[in-house]
Image (tube, rainbow, N blue to C red; front, side, top):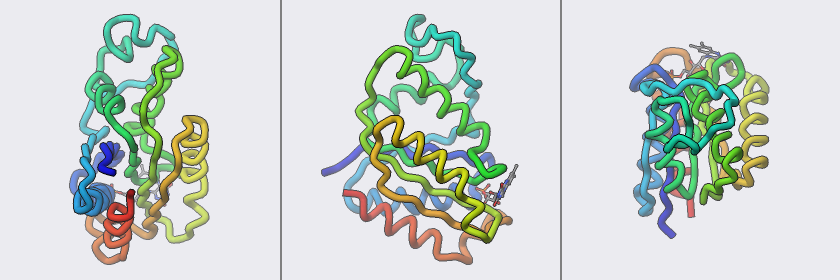
Length: 182
Ligand SMILES: Cc1cc2nc3c(=O)[nH]c(=O)nc-3n(C[C@H](O)[C@H](O)[C@H](O)COP(=O)(O)O)c2cc1C
C-alpha cells in the first residue's frame, strides 16, 4: 500500500550527511511507490512550545505564529513520520526538537493524527554506537507514547565533514530501508 511519508530533517547543514541520508531513504521509498514530503526544520522558524494550552483555539495548531503552521497540515496528511537527524549533544538538534515539542498541540486539543508508523535516521560524529543510546531511547519513548510503530532505525556513526557519509554504507542502508517500507 502506498503511504504518505513525512521526512522531518534536523540538520542546519544543507547538503550534509543527514540531508543525504534523508534523500537516500526517500529515493528508496519512492521506488516502491510511496509519496514522500521532506520538511527541513532547520530552514524554518519554529519556536518552542510555551505550554499556553491555547492550541487550535486561534485558527491554527499553535497560537504562536511561526512555521509550525506549515508543518501541521503535513502531519495531518502523513501515514508515517521519519526523523532524519544529526545527533547534537546525544539528542535532537533544537530545530527538530522545537517541531517535536509542538506535537503537544494535538494532545492538548485531543486531536488524533493518522500517523501509525515512524523511523529514525541518525548521523553522528562518535564511533561508539552506545553514544547513540540517548537519542534512540528518546525516539522510542516518543514513538511508544504516540502509539507509532517503530519501523526501524538507521545509525551512521563516525561522520564529521559534510560528505563523510559517502565513505560509509549509510546511504545504501537508508535506501534499502526506504525500499522495505510496506
Ligand atoms: C552542535 C553539535 C553537537 C554535536 N553533538 C554530537 C554528539 O553529541 N555526539 C556525536 O556523536 N556527534 C555530535 N555532533 C556531530 C554531528 O552529529 C555529525 O557531524 C553529523 O554527521 C552532522 O550531520 P550533518 O552533516 O547533517 O550536519 C555534533 C555536532 C554539532 C554541530
